[in-house]
Image 1 (cartoon, helix red, strand yellow):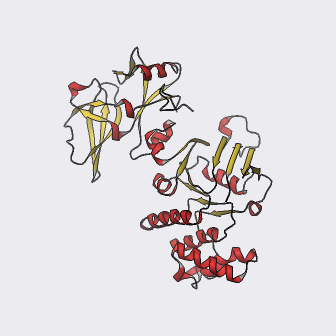
Image 2: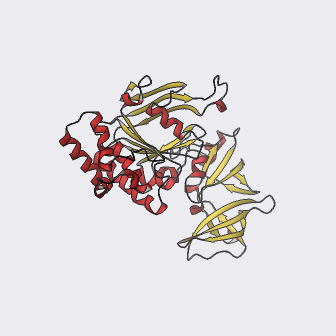
Image 3: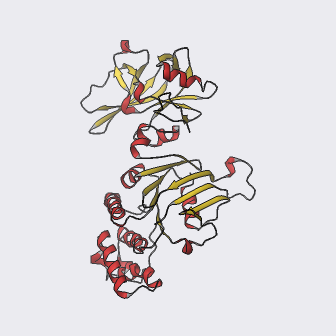
Length: 373
């Protein structure tokens, strides 16, 4: 097991990168502590797989260092780095039995036969594939093959870390939740540093203790699932995390608050003072649908009209149109038994759950509750 540190890491596939857009990975400084269960979350094309391949040694970074336990490993091969990597599609030997697939990494290390048998049985039991040990790998289902592929990474007890590159892509959706739970149990049992790459926020949240969210080649926030939901440090995190994502609106600063869709929203002096420090920047108001409050039109200067109701069983999502002229869409989430407005409705944004962003980064409040990166 190892601490993995990224020191001013950047990578470009261009021969002579000249500008930030030439980089697949922009400058990253980040630490994954030893023995932790982490997720690397982001949309396709944000740089997740590039970063994973640099950590494992399959790709050499253009700039910066990858460090294991304080030592640079840039010059080391994947084998020398002692990293196990599980890919989207199972990497196993079809002509071998499941037992021999699991034993193969240990035999390459010339481990004693008794230790190999013990370790193979332990990992097979953890993955619930003990009954498959004598079966040829080519006769397995897709999810069974991926379990074997995971087992090949877990069977060695000397690996620095295990990297999972969207390992459940080929798995039937009904079986994904079982494998996610199993991976979490395995991490708790073996205490191995694990980094799980995915574009699925549910996979990330159910597996990881902390999640690194990637956007446009950068890690824009690193935190627990609750921190990402309640206090997104970047507008992309607010939009990407949650279902539906955060409502985001550009606003203009006024004498005692902000103007949104033609309505003046008054703010506390502390919040207003914090925003004044960013008066020259693009200001964005963010609030999650869960925290939008519906009131009678006369109770709020901010009004909206109902456009669509999505009944999702245990709750409803309302699509509303904000404002009277230049309308903006806004979503509100309400309980299943809550009354749906017939047409016009007033909206309130509790200050506790309202976030403000300057050029997409969270504005620091004077009480220190929020932070600007």
